[in-house]
Image 1 (cartoon, helix red, strand yellow):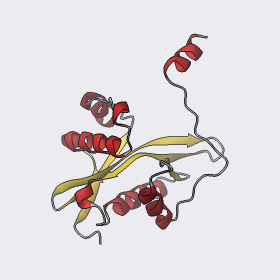
Image 2: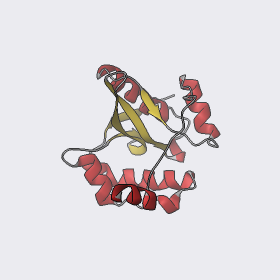
Image 3: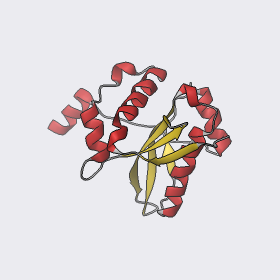
Length: 161
């Protein structure tokens, strides 16, 4: 199913494909109005010194087929780093060929090789195809926790206090 699919760390020359995937993901998630990141910002985050995030690029038939963008978090209770998957996207033309599974498997290998505690991510509650895919991998929702976020005026007000 994933024959012919390769996964590798993204390189600076992959930035146009990564940006295309980011914008397509924003459209799919009905959040295009929030997608204001520039090529320069994403390029600096992925390929600056130090990098603030990391990306894997999947290729099939010699073409960019999908990507995973991730970064490290740290758990004080476990005393170990973890990997947080920010974005996973597969071009619709390459879906159902094992691309997403290959990207997730590569991240899982990295978690184990580096001695990280776990791999985590968020998924929109209406995204049934993604939820079904993640359940098939053995993922489980984290019960009892809600995501909190400070931004905009509330963030500025707290910083000014």
